[in-house]
Amino acid sequence: MAMAMRVAATVVAPRGLRGLFSTFSSTSPFVPPPTIQADKPPPAEPSTNLFVSGLSKRTTTEGLKEAFSKFGQVIHAKVVTDHVSGYSKGFGFVRYSTLEEAAEGIKGMDGKFLDGWVIFAEYARPRSAPPVNNGYQYGPR
Image 1 (cartoon, one colour):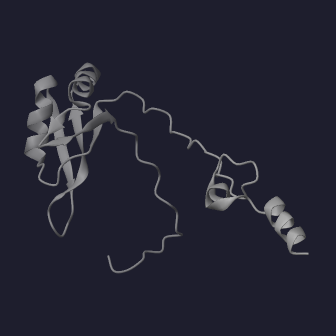
Image 2: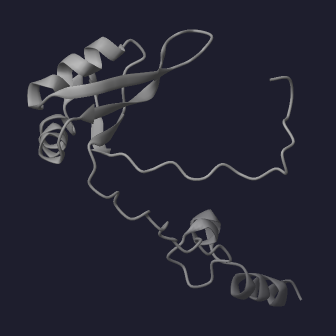
Image 3: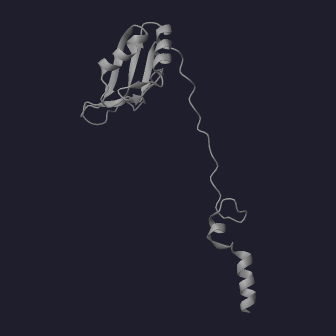
C-alpha cells in the first residue's frame, strides 16, 4: 500500500520545487501573462510649439529659453511649476517663430543634458476639449 502511494505521488506532483516553479516545465500550473503592446498615440503634427519633458526640478523658464535659443528665435518658453513649492514639475513648452527653427530645436536638444538631466523635445499636441460637466463647478472658484 505504501509503495502504491509513493508511485502515485511521483506521477501527480512534479519533482522538487524547481519543477513546481519552473516556467519551462510543461506540467507547471503557472502561465505567464501575455505581453500586451500599449497603443502609442500617433506622432504630433509639426508645429512651432514644442513639448519638453525630463526637466530637472531646478530648471527655470530663463534656463529653458536660453538652452533652446541656440537653435532659433524663441518667442515664448515656460517651465510648468508646482504652485506650492515653486519647483518644476518636470516639463515645459517652447515656442519658435518658424517650423524650421522648431525642427532644429528638436534635433538639437532631444536626448541632450540640461541642468544634469536628459531632456526630450517633441512637437506639442493640441489640448483636448475639457470634459463637459453641465456647468457645475467643483469646490470654490
